[in-house]
Image (cartoon, rainbow, N blue to C red):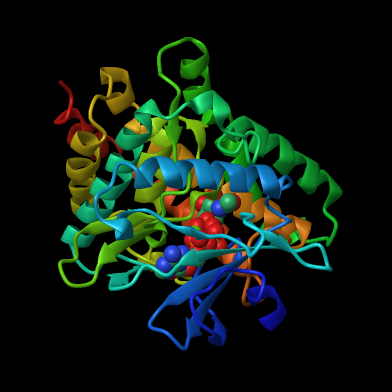
Length: 353
Ligand code: ADP
Ligand code: GN1
Ligand code: MG
């Protein structure tokens, strides 16, 4: 790791470099130095991203755009260049590395401790979306093509199911049946987009609570992180993915499904923060937020199940059956969303113009 760190313009000598955080995609390290400065070092996932130089151009453009609009430097991510002035370093094994300033005096939560924490994350993601309204969307490279194209996720699921490389399908017939029973509705948002009923915006696309930092003293929203999937998308994706993760009553990988439900007070609190912070949303955009929550949860469950069938190549796992446990919580959440659909619609209805 020393050799990797030497490539970057760090302030001072690196003293330690340890695994950090709970992301499922990149390999993240916290770097301390002999100065007060700390850094985040990341090995960018080659399983997830197939053109990392183009991804890094996106990240550099988005961070520069946001930094110009935020008065506090802790409010946007800051990339540390390599000694040659580059955005990343590629090692002899072909792995790509990047370094960010560590966002000091901040917290990153795996679940909201209070409804106010979740509200603050909603303000952060809504403001992020609003600030990027003037970003030139056509300059963004699509880091993961068809990322939230749920029908395309089904296409891949069918492929992996047919291959059944590890012979796992027979043991997960219930989950497969659940996925298949929901396939018909997977294309609803994309159909609306195609018919011109919803605008394409620049969205974050991975709005988990642990992709936002809150100020540890004020506990106010500070900075949105994990910008690898910033691409054109629908506002319902960002609303939906936040609800999927943060309004759930249990962790994404909870094994006791009786604990997995949807907290509608948190759902409402998120809407209260997110919708006004986005600025101008159309009536149709607001109306599709509940569907965004349902489809993002369905899609995520399907992706976990697909990765389980394929041998756990994509998401980091730390125990056997981890992706299957995750798929099960998402499916339970979809079922809960359906059971409470009228209440959910009513809540969002209160925000219609
Ligand atoms: P992944 O794509 O694997 O989720 P992230 O970029 O989200 O990777 O980073 C993983 C975790 O590392 C985050 O959830 C957060 O806890 C921490 N982290 C990432 N960047 C920073 C930063 N600049 N300052 C402080 N913590 C960070
Ligand atoms: C991944 O990178 P991370 O852990 O913030 C994934 C998201 C999933 C999420 C499920 C690039 O997010 O799409 O919703 O796991 N990111 C990518 O927890 O695939
Ligand atoms: Mg992350």
